[in-house]
Image (cartoon, rainbow, N blue to C red):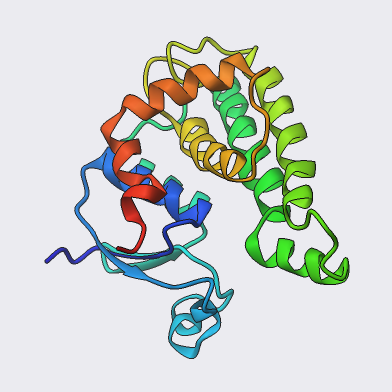
Length: 212
C-alpha cells in the first residue's frame, strides 16, 4: 500500500488538479474520500488535517500539504514535472492562465458558495445553475482570449501538459456539468481534446474516481 495519501472528493476541482499531477509524476497514492455533500470536510477528523475544512490534503514525504496550487508547486519542484516555463516572462504568463481559473473562477463557483447564493435567493428558479454559468462562461471566454498569446501545440502553452492544463480541465468538467456553451472557444476545445487523450488526465477524471 502506498504511503502517499490523498484526501479528496471525486468532483472537487482542486482534488482533480492534484490527481492529474500525481499521475503525471507517476506517484502511486491511496485515496481517502472526504464526502463534501455529507459535510465530512467540516468534521473534527478532517479539520485536524486542514483547519480550513477543504480538500485536497496530500500526505507525502513526511509532510501534510494543503491548497492545490501549493501542492502542485511542491510536486513540480520535487518531481521535476516542468509545469511552468523556466523563463520569467513565459512563466508569469502560464501562471496567469492557471490563476484565471484557480483564483478567479473556481472560488465563486465553489459548492459552498453556490449553495449559499441559492439559499439567499430563496431557491430561485434556475439556481445554482444560473450562478455557475454567470461566472464560468465569461471566465472561460477570457481564458480563451489569453490563450491567443500561446502556441497550443497541443497543450495550453506548448507540447507538454503544464499548470494551465491542470487547472483548465477540471473547470471544463464543471462547465459541461452546468451546461455552459463552449462552442465559440476553439483553443480551449483543442486543449481539451489533447488532455483527454493523455492517460494522466483520464485516470484523474471524476468519472474514473466516482464512488461505485
